[in-house]
Image 1 (spheres, rainbow, N blue to C red):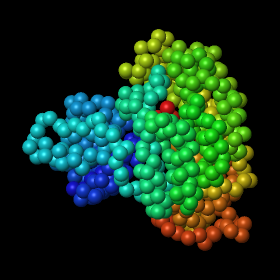
Image 2 (image 1 turned 90 degrees about the vertical axis):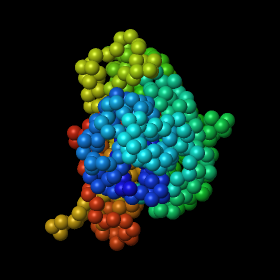
Image 3 (image 1 turned 120 degrees about the horizontal axis):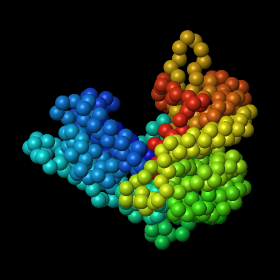
Image 4 (image 1 turned 90 degrees about the horizontal axis):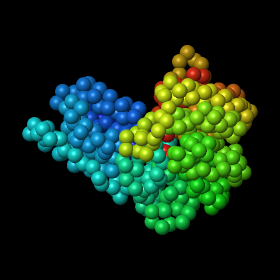
Length: 483
C-alpha cells in the first residue's frame, strides 16, 4: 500500500511521523511524496492550543476531500489523542484514529482500518493509551540533522497548558534507546542531533535520577565523537542547575543555545500561570557567564487572564533590558479543561492582538541589534538549501549556525559552493531582523568555491529568507509543545 504522511505541530510530531514511516515501510508499504498517489494518508495532528486544533481539523477535512478515491484516511497525534472517536463525526470518511502515545502500533491500525473499510463498518477503529517511548525504531537524518525525543508527557501544572491531559505524566525514554537513535543518525551522516522533550531538564527525575540530562549529554558526547552539534530544546527555568551548566560548558559539541520558555516576566502573572517566579535577570546573567556567546531563546504569552497594562509594560521593558536573541510571542488561547479557562478577567481579543504587536516590535528590534554584533565574525553553518544555479552567477545557499534551531530561528544566507548536509565556515557581512548574510570562507581564508566534498543533493529549493516582515507567530509550529 502506498502511503503519505502529513505532519503538523512540534518537533516531537516529526519524530513520531518519521517512526511511522519506518514501521510502515518495514511492514511492506511504500511512501510516496504526493497525496494524490497514496492509498493511505495519515495526518499527524497537533492539539495543543485552539489555533493548532483548528489547523489540524482543517487539514483532516482538506485531505479527506482531496485524497484518491478509495484511499484510507487515519488521524494520528495529539488531536487524535484528545478527541478520540469523536473525530469520526466531524471528518468525512475518516477510517481510523491513533493517539500520540500509540503511533508504534501504526501498522496494526492500518490493517484494522483496512478491514473496517472493506466490511463498510460504521465504527472506526481507535487506539489510544499506549507508551511509544518503549519502542525501538530505526532513524535516518534529513539535511544533516535529526531530532531525538528523550521523554514524553509532563508533570508541570501550568494553568494554561493542556499537554498533561493529552500526553499523560512525564516519562523518560530509556537511555539505551536514546543512545542507539543518536548512533543511527550519526552513522547516517547527521552532523547535528536535537534533543527534544516537554521539559528536557526533567530527564530521569521520574526514575529518581539526579542530574539526568547532564549525564545523558556526557554519554552522547562519549558515544558519538563524530557529532558536531548536540542541541537541547526546552529547559525549565528552575531545573537549570550548576551541574547542567558546567556540563554544557565542558562539552564543545553542545551548542551554546538555550531555549528556556519563560512565558512572562511579571511575578503576579507568573503566579497566576503557576510558573516559576525566580529572578529572571539573575538567571540570564548566569547563563551568559557560564556559556559565553550563548544564544538565548524564549517564548512569552500576552493577554493571559488578568494581565494589566502595567504588567504588559513590565514584560516589554524586560525584553528590552534582557536582550534575548530569539523570542516567540503568543496570544493567550483559552483551553477547556485547564485552570486558566475559567479564570476571571479574560482579556478582549483586540487587546491581546495589540499587545502581541507591541511585543513583536520589541522582539524584532532587539533581534536585529543582537544579529548586528555578529557582522565580521566567522560561524560554522550547516547547509540546508542550495539555490539552483542559473545565469552563470554564484549560487546562494541557506543554512543554520549554532544559534539557530531547525525551522524556528533564522537562517544564514551566503554565497559559495557546498552540499546540503555539509558544514562550512561563513563570514557574516550583514544582519537582518532574523537572518544573517555572509560569504563562505575556504581553507585558505578566501571566499568562494572551497571545493568541498558533496555527499547530498546539491540542487535544492532555497528556503525563503525570513527577514523583514516575518511573522514570528509562525514559530508556534516549533514552540507550541514546550513547557
